[in-house]
Image 1 (cartoon, rainbow, N blue to C red):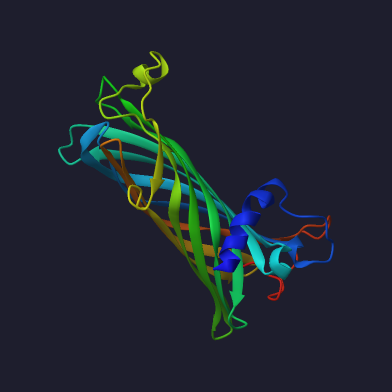
Image 2 (image 1 turned 90 degrees about the horizontal axis):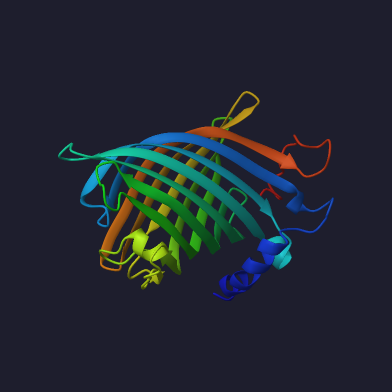
Length: 281
């Protein structure tokens, strides 16, 4: 628990200065991955409609990880950006909704190296979210803006193993928002009233587990194909809230595939193998 509290103190400082110059230490090794995927989403926003909308979704995810000097070099930093776009329809097939969301996570994980091949990571995460939902049938209040920020708890398990002589890396990660703030109009309040008439109410609200029970889960498998490192993943993104007497959720399930690259932050050394003892992943 003391380690988690210390990480909470280090998080804002690390956002200002992520690393110092060091040509020899492990924090020079960086893992970067880009994944593209498609899946299925279920959307509800009672500000726009009391009905659920379902349909396909496309998504991109970019991730980077490296070690830091914090706590004797046992803390890694993870930056994870993702964006997704969906086009959905209600069950009655009378209306469509388009939704787009952007999410950025910045996390500090303390790495517990249980064995040479098994690691458990845990720490705080800053979670930023923004986007929109547009109802193509509504004339009044056709769109809903989505904006919220959370301090989350993040955990990860990374396991390296072999099938015969074939190396694989499996990872499971879960991010749970603990507390934050969210923008929301009040029930029956239009955006014209908020921004033009300046009749604002309680539009910025405190959120926690009681009114924003959300969870992101990510499962990935890294595998080499000749000289290329590939990654296959499954993302279960459950975002939901109940504020200002309005209910909303975006439930997404996406399968993703992409590439993993390892870098060493010196000129002329951008393609080197990452030793296991210094690897953030």
